Length: 314
Image (tube, rainbow, N blue to C red):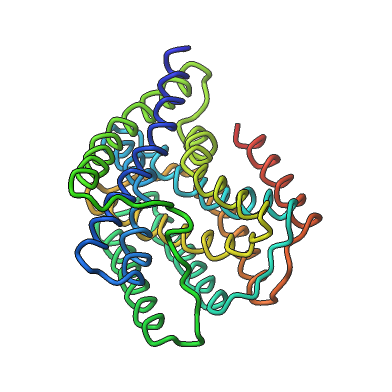
């Protein structure tokens, strides 16, 4: 039992570091190749930051524990709204004023509803996964075209603020890429094995572990970044990051995982957790369309709702 806890903890920590190494190495390589910053931010960085969730879900599906794979995505999308937005809002008000928020949150809502409809028969097939991934690629392409045309003078953000110093020497880039590519599969194996062992030891379902511990663990980088931004009174970036993360979770993680192996989904997750994910997505949509400022009261309500949800799941 202790070994399972240590494996899970080590896996989650390694996921964070290996994912960071991979993204920095890939971004540094892209800059060396002369790829525009805009393209790097919307593709290399966006896909790279989803790598930890992707390898965990893929490892789970291939290891015969699909509930962790789906639970990781569903739980992360719930945590992103109720936890990653709720906690920072308690520190500093999050304003929904950025250009393009309403349009992107509408896309997120469409992805959420489409995903729920696809798995309503208890299975995400390869064909359905292909549609999810194709939809994500289309979304990224439109983002790039709109940003390059400076439509509505949207701010795409500078990924250097999030990633810090990037490697540019060939040797350092190679080390970063190797560290990420080697570390992520190892981290995923440790995480899935530890989570499965804990679930078996405590009699908790695989879905519950995926929806809570694994989902929060893989969302920790986003939470840490957003909390740091809140302390600097720059928490407004949280909304864009959350929306993008939720779209990528469904489009990239479930899309790629489902393309490689069809993913069965437990009925209880469809009946309960998917609706919680949809409710969180609808709440975020209302916040963005109505331009509601998320402050202490709403943030505390979100955080409390998440604690209640975790208590029900466990």
